[in-house]
Amino acid sequence: MLQGEVGYVRLGSTKQRILEHLRLRKASAAELAGELGLSKVAIYRHLEDLKRDGLVRVSTRPVQGRGRPLRLFEAIDEPTAYARMCREMLEQIEELYGPGAGVRVLRARYKKELETWRQGFQGLTLEERARRLAEWLTERGYQAESRREASGLVLEQRRCPKLALARDYQALCQVEMDFFSELLGVSLVRECSMTAGDTCCRYRIEPDGGAEG
Image 1: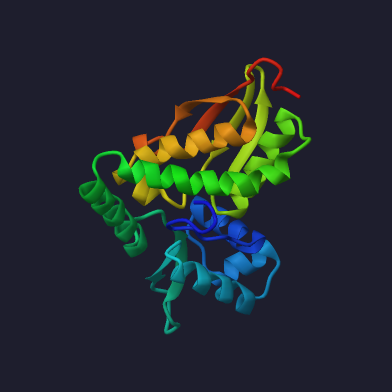
Image 2 (image 1 turned 90 degrees about the vertical axis):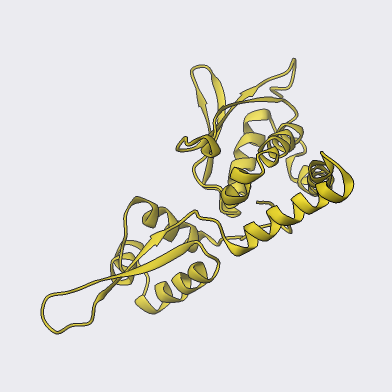
């Protein structure tokens, strides 16, 4: 999710790399240290931060002999207390102010973000804007990438920090897609969605007229 919004967790590059490893398989701190070229102390510090933010969990596995059980870490995308609170707040807003009030609040928030984000997209081509958006989303925990395929540009997100909330409040996905469209200056077509059980959220970027420049 975007900075300042519900469920937002900004991840540094090392934490992002740790999560990418843990989405593939469980791993111990020692394994992660070896794969990433960091000390176990540094890895443990990052893991504790990720655990506190609700992004990883730990389990134990017995070892042969008298050694202590092996601690294994894995990435999770599950409902958190914060996500539940946000869903309840949006529902309460709609109860108080009528259907659609929650969406209006979200759109107002994204509109404010748009004013800030647009500054970093000025003077860029469409492909550069798509790449910049993917980079910014990845910094914010989305694990996103943009690429050009034979049929055109696509934007993919393989992780969603707000997935737990979006599953219960799916209007959030439409508001976010509209935000991406405004930022890129073109239309988007959603082809896959993690809320529907797909492995990623995938958007086809549709150039409008002369938007390629």
